Length: 443
Image: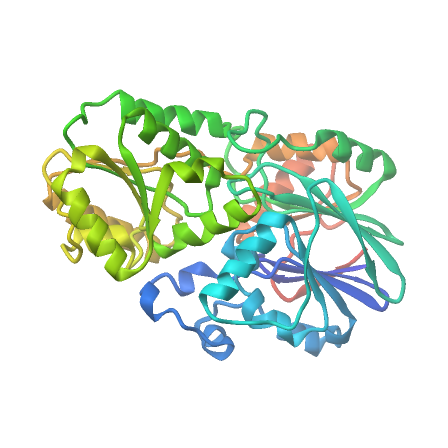
């Protein structure tokens, strides 16, 4: 069995890993590198495959042609709905005679992305329910399981591929949240059963493996948000909250708190609508009926004029938590939309700035503009969706894999994950492999 690192082993993003078993191979995730496109305004984001390759936004799947693997690819196996894991599918998947398989919410998000960009692909889209399996056809049959695991978007899965060489467990991304706000906690029972069967390789998210902590539950983020909304004076102020559009659990909390404040909850922006449509289609967002959504220019301007006249009656949820050019909050801060910010209005970032130079610069400029309006800013009202050092230790102990491949980060992050494994008795180079894009390890 060979494991090929295609993307996400030199950077945070464009995640893509290939597992090769004889005449069959499987692609795990197919993500985009968001920093490469974040500076491009949303209205201009009509990209081609060639254009994205020029920007360095796509994983180098041309590696598969160079290694004569292209005709061996049987399926794309998707772990969850974040763009750094599925965003390259519309541009790459058609180059392969392979089905695209994932959890219901993941596949529905992919459908909305294709609809929104007026794209079609020839590949079959196959939904597999959480904690279920699917049989894939190659030169032989392969069983793949999609095991529920907690993260910051619904229906995130640990993918277990059963091969003649043993089980490959792909866990990219994850956290160990035992009190989730939406959905079930991680399926520890099935992971323990797989451990007893024998896991040959664990490929695991090590984004925060250098941090000496356990990542707190989403219920803590809900508490932080509740404390800001109900523990500060805002009765006559405008309230704007911005967060990750894919974070349906956070949107649930925001909506419920808005209703408790007796405010009308409105979602502004195309990205929010995209993920909420997928959540409604998979019946995981009953709270959607308590929030109105607006996406198009005329709709946005009309509702913003109403909000502007009576800001104390509304709670606004909008795009722009990273300061992205063209996002709703960016345009509001520039006075480019008919919603005027006033002294003591609240702007709540229920998010963390993703640490890349372009994001940090955009966010800094956004905050500078917001402060000129004399608003109250509440930053980092958030808990991560990624496990830290002690989560990684617990996950390795739970699954007891023979080999470990740290993933989702640059060399420093992968090295930190490898050192956790070393502390547990593994040896780098013997049964822990620090990969880089374009590298392969045979197991």
